[in-house]
Image (cartoon, rainbow, N blue to C red; front, side, top):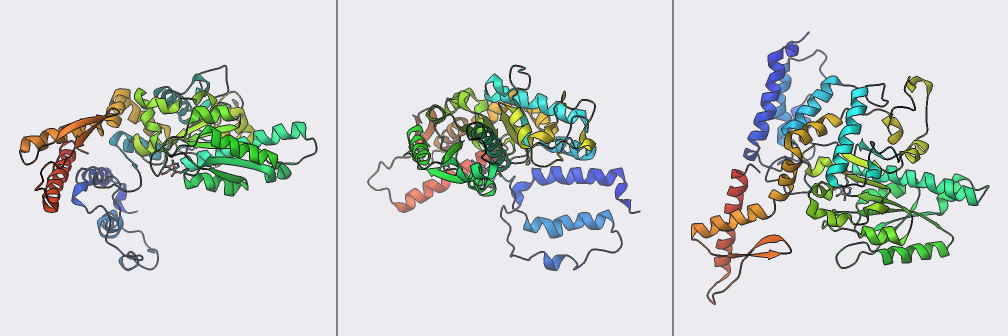
Length: 442
Ligand code: PLP
């Protein structure tokens, strides 16, 4: 028995994590290593005898950290936000320690019950219609935490397919699922994330990429045109995945037009931008939400709940049940049918207690704290930057408001301004911006 069971050593890791996050600016954000760098740092085979915790812990800095891209660094500007926060980390630590698998209500009642509660909280926070709430007893709607937005897009497509099979079998008696599947067509914009394409690939469903307009938005008329063409060919349009906040340019598809255009299953992928709907002023992009059948966004991106955590809602969970319809005896319990068993809402059986970190984060920051977090990055910091730059006396600028956005106007006014003057000014601006981000604990 090695000594890593002692309490003090377990606390050492907590200190390490706290120090790591506090001092993260001291590390280069992108590692300077080549493929295979780790090979020479660790033995060729697993140790025969257990090692001491001290030896293992030492290797975190020696072996792991040199190859880490520090996603939590304020200097990280690649991909998308994948933020964590202390309440989130603590929530997951507790979840990992409890280590329950909440596939059915009975497999750990608190896991399911808390998920139902926080998903209703979150639905209200982003302004989803009541049909998406567990607490609304008029519908079979509700939310579930999925692993990723990609999973949610795929799950929604499978549910839409189940509905398409049911509908077309009613009017075309004798057709089997495979024959219908071969005629199904799904739609998304040419700006949609690659996970939508992947969902179509896995489900063996044709995917049409609707050309977006000049604002990179998928529009109703373009969708309708594609649907009409497909219908003329004898195909069966059944699913649209619209994006609110595309990966490339954070563009928004026109939900209202898409919903009015056709009564297909409308799934919303709001993976990145969905958190912004906690602020009322961004809800304009949700106009048409009443047409939507399923909606997903990633608290694991902008809501400071670290990966993995995708919030997904459906209006009719009965279709998910029919899609993932397995019910072995060993998973039945006294409350089967009466309580929610989330295993029927997802592809895998097992699921972690992810609601804990979401609950901790929402409670710690409060709705107002989260709204502040979303809004703060915009106007407040830019305003502060301008004030400090002007106060420095090194250059002088004035602001402008562009559709509610505070921007700094940099105008070249003198006939003597040259390239090196502008480079000098840019250096001052970027250094000041970095200092502000540091001061504000970004
Ligand atoms: N959809 C959009 C719009 C995204 O921006 C991303 C990731 O950047 C994804 C889906 C994929 O998210 P996930 O990794 O949760 O599957």
